[in-house]
Length: 608
Image (cartoon, rainbow, N blue to C red):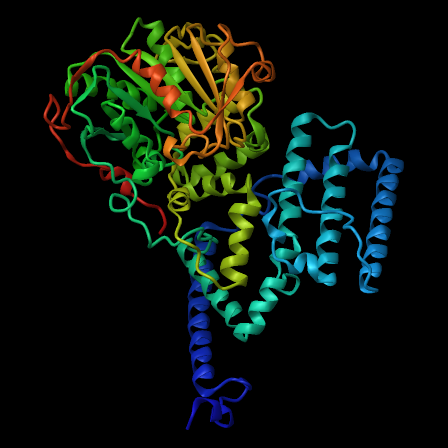
């Protein structure tokens, strides 16, 4: 009997499907039921062990209550805003009616440039979906505009309300629901609902990965393996302690600059963002440029390291690395790079060294690093006393902040791209995420020791003590960034949403040595990882002798250059890195090799 003649023997309740299709679907539902039951049992056990969860972990209820009271204090303004919305709705209804009668009309409102949620032609071509789209855009823009115009609200509260209002608006987009997304409806019809069933399986898989918390896969996690197809530059671990491994990379030139280069990456992420693949690896490019490259690979801390503080990261990180590099190469002086929070640490370290007369770092580069947190951008939304208290309570249970918590925070800054697009793809369309090395790295989360993390959040973000001379005292040494007199190269990303360029630029007014500031196109990652061979983006330079007080003034006199800034940085650093010496082979100097790069610390994963 052919498969087409099978419906008369199809399983009851699954009409319209062949026996083979029905049996396959029933097997899927059985799998879903079994996995769901197991998840519910695990959730119940964890709930009984941990007790009920905080219903408002971000402590937003009081913030929005206070904000609403301010809004209602001026009812006339609220009524006026509502009338404006109704007028826009009337215009949309009229426009839609005209379209239904076959007339060609211009849209009342259109998505912002770069908004990918409504790229499918049906959002424009089909009247119903065009109406849904425009109605959503009108309402969301009205709500955001109304929130911004409430009087009597301090700037930090306003920013917090605006941010979380945007999260709410993004979540309610019609593109996020099966019945109002034309792509999902089409897929449901074409696959007879298989997309939704597969999506449910994907949802269960992500709940299982997160042990009851939704851990949305942004990429195919099985497509990459650290040390095999990402982080592949050859080298050796030549030193390690409980906090970090120091990697020395194999030379790619016969001669190298005398002065080694130490890279201090952030410990909020793994270092291999600088070594994803050979064609865009900054590490590989720097070795090809003739530098002896050392990189700190931070440990992924567990319960044993919860007492680590910021001072430990300085002593066991860059200061320990300087001692090791001298043993490995015989060179006392090095140049250094600090990336993001690694740059904040490097600035602290340089001020500490300056106060003690330690001159081992001769020049330093900063990648998207803040030292003055007056204007920290949207991350400042999370830094008020209520939310910091909430973070502290969360960390008190295990002594560290789970890496997934940090990942969620950063994903919220670009929720449509890093959260909701994957909800649609994975759960509504029933597709597996596409293999993408950058998103694999993004999901490779790291923990934050409680003591260190609270010190950083409170003293840098909340109190902004690093920029105040003597505001921080580390190892009995008052920290004064004005004592940093060595040459520095500061990179900022024009579209950086984590370390805004305006905030990064403030360091030019603090350091007392010569500062070369460079503004790169794109953001926190692509603004840094942009090899010359890619011929992408651009960068700006201002060759004036002294950097003006503000970024806006600097930009007014800046000249745009096409492509990567890496060559400009190399020209700057090579002139300060001494003459050429024979290339150094990792493990052949004063420090024997411990293991092959990228080492074992970076391979510790929290979730697969």
